[in-house]
Length: 375
Image 1 (cartoon, rainbow, N blue to C red):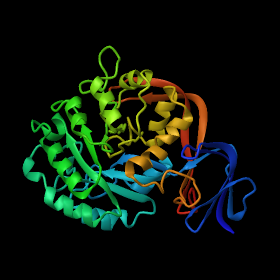
Image 2: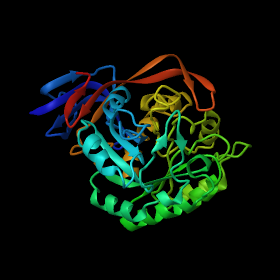
Image 3: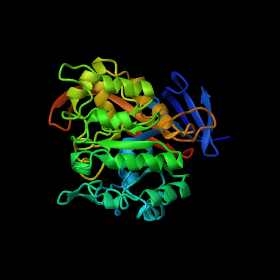
């Protein structure tokens, strides 16, 4: 007997090439079956809705109460349909134990983390205080970062560093170099944040390794990935060919429609779409993951590819193949969405507005094989 069955929805699972009206069944915390006529102890009629693997948001900040930019993971995941939130560097080796004990282990949704190479993570990020943690090289803590990452491999998926004029001042690529050494030492991928120069976009992606992630990949000028003529910079194409992954990381300053239009027009789809949700952008311009996904939908990206960028591709970036799929035996997470027509206002980080004709909404979440939200 199955525990939970989602009946009659449009199941979109890019990892299996599935786009069909059918049922999804869960048992013992995992996906058990996909097919018509499934029965179980808790059957939910989701006809007219879209059922996807549990959405993964590859860039969030959910160390609520531990850092000033943290938001509540469970509340965010309900409104975003997210079942796996990846915290990207809120905590460093000096405060990760508190993040693990007080937030990660108590959360009903899955929280994984990129560990910041800076001792206290992103500690000076608020409306009143804005201190780039990578400006002071005395805060770089590679030895402890390697020790903490190695001891917490069940929840730490990589190393995080922030470089750019706001995050690292005039230090250039020096913090990135240290973070890469930590990532190499522990055998994990690295996620690099980039903002205004220095360093340049080209310098940063030139240092990244296959499987490393550049977040804020579609940021506005300066340090945009495209030229003024609307072509993709050669260094960006070379980095993709090498295996560097490009993540959106919308946030409050890192996604521009102008950049996205140029990149998409050249056939350059981001590997992953993420919100970079935190306390200063959850009320706009990022809002949540489904809003970020909807922006790409309204720029002409096919629905299946939008879903892929928050499921299969995100799981690939994390090296967690058990996530982002509805294959039997996968983690028993699923997201129920509605795709609604209308006139929806979207805004990017430079204030450009786009009126879209469609919008995705979170309508239900299955976590660990059981219906989690709405209660």
